[in-house]
Image 1 (tube, rainbow, N blue to C red):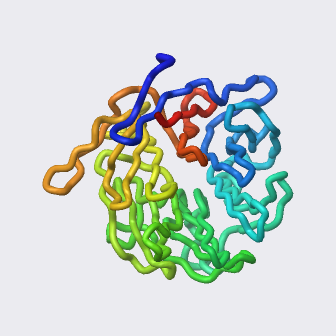
Image 2 (cartoon, helix red, strand yellow; image 1 turned 120 degrees about the vertical axis):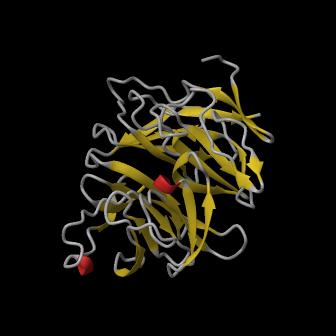
Length: 315
């Protein structure tokens, strides 16, 4: 990979720093690198399902700050929420079927387990949560992306309030509701949910009522990441879902694809996006996008040979 490789389109182009997150694999190994966030101190936090160090904290230059966590074999989703001036992490574990809220030092604050209220009707369906999003009132939206295909709504104390979605082909249903986010860009908070197998994002109001969909043909997307007026998405597969076919998707405030680092140039015909594919095999299976306070990107990858995250510096 060239040292001066530039990816992306228009105003969203990036220089690739492929070895940004590299560490000693013997002392600080990774397996799948699933998600990343930036904390209020500017540090970059990685979640990996290697139980020698589930949480790896870097500074923006890629220097190791600290590590912790040995109890999350299915470490998958990582959400950061500042509550009362303190940062907290919400970790989803697909193997243990739990969501844990922790401090940045790894102290457990709360655990959310399988929702018991639905055990009778869903007794044969596993609870395999993949992602969380936290509303301003403290409500926790949990995407059961590898399980029941519902979005569960809990209050800030972990009490189940309601759910929406479920499996199906209808607009308000899901097939792999992999990620969830709160979108407040237009001043009205809405729930933005990944419908990965349908190559779509779906909008719901805060009560879970369906509103609209965004088609991203050929893009098998992970969670939506909102930053300023844009949505960033790791496209884990593209085209016809071939292995090692990932790229990054960036949407504008109108939810139109304007840049695809690693992918072909986005094109719209009759106001519809044409099918997307990987153009440069820089990524294998990108699983998340972390956008820092300088608008640089950090990309962790799933099933990519235990590689560390790379950095994309905006140019």
